[in-house]
Amino acid sequence: MITLALSKGRIFEETLPLLRAAGIEVLDDPEKSRKLILATNQPEVRVLVVRATDVPTYVQYGGADLGITGKDTLLEHAAEWGGSIGAAGLYQPLDLGIAKCRISVAVRADFDYASAVKQGSRLQVATKYVSIAREFFAAKGVHVDLIKLYGSMELAPLVGLADAIVDLVSTGNTLKANHLVEVEHIMDISSRLVVNQAALKLKQAPIRKIIDAFAAAIAK
Ligand code: AMP
Image 1 (tube, rainbow, N blue to C red):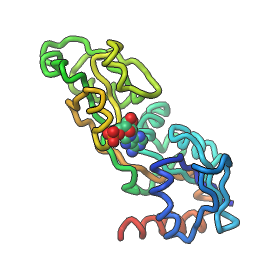
Image 2: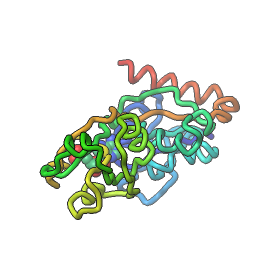
Image 3: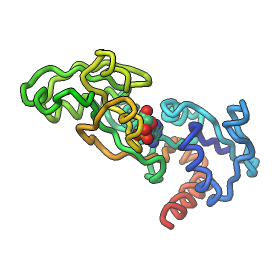
Image 4: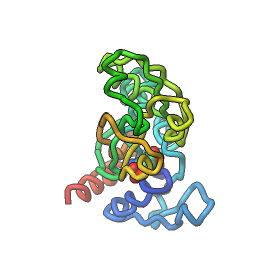
C-alpha cells in the first residue's frame, strides 16, 4: 500500500492533475465526504486528508509514505528538527510549483514600519511562522517579540496585539480588506513533495513511479 498525505483545499485541488498524470484518480471528494482515508482507482494507493501542518509529521513517522505541503510548513517543521528536513527523515525530491504564494511582513496602513525599523525599536510580530519570522528579522538585525498565533493573523495589528504580522499572501485581498499593507517580501512559497526516507527504500519502485510521473507532469 502507498499512502499519500494531503490537505484539503488548494493543495488537494492542484494535486489532482498530478495524480491523474500518475494514473491515479481519487474516488471521493474531501469537501463532500467526511472520510479521512480516500480510496483511489488503484487499490494499492490511498490518500489521507490531514491538516497542512500535520503533513510532515505523518510522513516523518510513516503514517504516510509521501505528502504534499507548502515550503512554509516544511521550514517550520524542519526548525523543530535542527533546521534540516533530512534530519526529520524526510526526502524532498520535488518542488511541485503548486499553491504558489509568498510570505510577507504586513502592518497597518498607518504604521510607519520604515521608521520603526530604522529607530531600532522592538517590533511586536504576530505569526504562525515563528521560525521563518525569527530568522528573517535576525538577519536584518531587527529586534522582535514574536507572538504565536494559529490563524487570522490579520486581526492582531487591528486590535493592538502586534505591530506587524508575518503571513502568507496570495492575491493580497485579505490584507486589503483589513487595511493592512505588505512592507517586506520574505520569500516565495510553493508546495513540495516529501517522502519518508525509509519508505522510499522499502517501496522504491511504486514510489519512484509516482515521483517520476509528478516530475514529468510539472515539466510540461
Ligand atoms: P489572499 O487574500 O489571496 O492574499 O490570501 C491570503 C490568505 O489566504 C491568508 O489568510 C493566507 O494565510 C491564506 N493563504 C494564501 N495563500 C495560501 C497558500 N498557498 N496556502 C495556505 N494558505 C494560503
